[in-house]
Amino acid sequence: MNAERTAPPKTAVVTGAGSGIGRSVALELLAAGWSVALAGRRTETLEETAALAPAKDGAALCVVTDVSRPDDVAGLFTRVRESFGRLDLLFNNAGTFGPGGVPVEELPYDAWRHVVDTNLNGAFLCAQAAFRQMKEQDPQGGRIINNGSISAHAPRPNSVAYTATKHALTGLTKSLSLDGRPYRIAVGQIDIGNAATDMTERMQSGILQANGELASEPVMDVCDVARTVRHMAELPLEANVQFATVLATNMPYVGRG
Image (cartoon, rainbow, N blue to C red; front, side, top):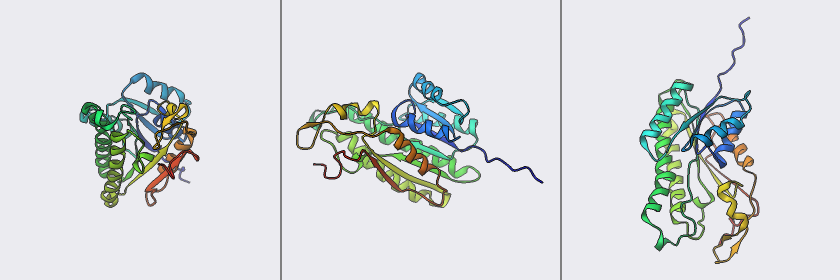
């Protein structure tokens, strides 16, 4: 009898893997046996993420990457190809809120540009590199999941740069999803509201509402987001979650404003 072959581990790139949602998703995938390239701007936080995964889980590769820099992105995907041989998933997660609470008429152009470069241009550069690799590899195909936001549907006050990029990300998702069909590249988006991370601590202390009042908002466990991403990632390529919305149940989203 022929020995049963063990399928090789699936491989993923997670951007913004040094903290928050990116760290949680990376650890969820590693625990499930995936090999994961952890991409982010700081070596120490990436190594902290890798150290949180038990040794028996999937392999972690730390790659310092600024997603707004084309050369950094090219280097990231070269490292992934050399280390893992193929790419099954890109979780396009790196992002920034930018300066919070700044009225549109006072927002510096440099601040606007930084948010656009990170949230939109960075997502495009990573998706483009992943798309190329998934199209060329054998067997062909893979999956891209973009991290959108509740702000891809409804803005918060004084969030013009963040909200504009997240609306644009929805267009990127739809276009990539269409263009990926001939090559077995499935593309979807997860829109997240109030996952408990360092970036959302202010939600609980009080945040500006559409009526001008300050109010604390409920948050949810970031692990619930990670499990949702893993579910999307582990579907066969014949199935795709085009858009998923995961939010703290009682946050002001439905009826916002």
